[in-house]
Image (cartoon, rainbow, N blue to C red; front, side, top):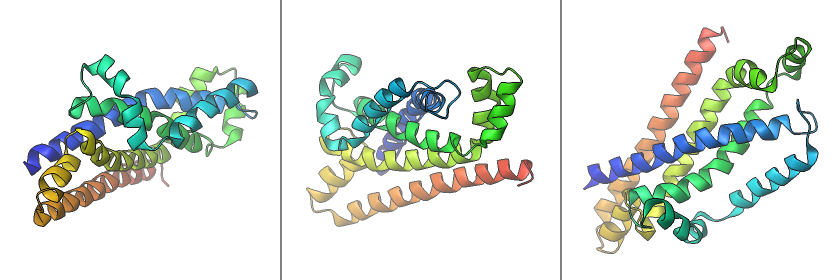
Length: 213
């Protein structure tokens, strides 16, 4: 049961993390480019999109799960199960990662971007050849932080039928007074956090080493 629950948790976390990466990265680039100091300043649009991002981020995840039940049913066909839990996890993760990636992109030296603009680079070229490569170690660290946060969110999803380790801990551990099982789920979650953090730290160090940093 613990093995299947762990695999279900990893499925939820990495699927929603990948979807958040695909959707959140362009969103973060939009926020960077349309800021006052950006390549294509659009202050009104920047504030509007930034407000929507902040509103979505401010929702407690437990409330967000309930609020998104109609959307989850529309997309998946049900609001229960591990696949259904991916919908609220992804919605919560996209604005979270967008802000993390935005901070990573802002660490890139403005002088490099200005040089690219002088040479006639387009925003897409700046994003592809400058912002993403230069901020890659920071992006990887922030993506690992996202996955670790999603681990915590996934346990809350288990409280409302999302499956995974959260469901095992509550329904088979807490409700049945099975303390050893609850302890095992906590240990597995700690190990998963350490594994994710260690893996991405290793990748980040490898990239910095290749760059001579």
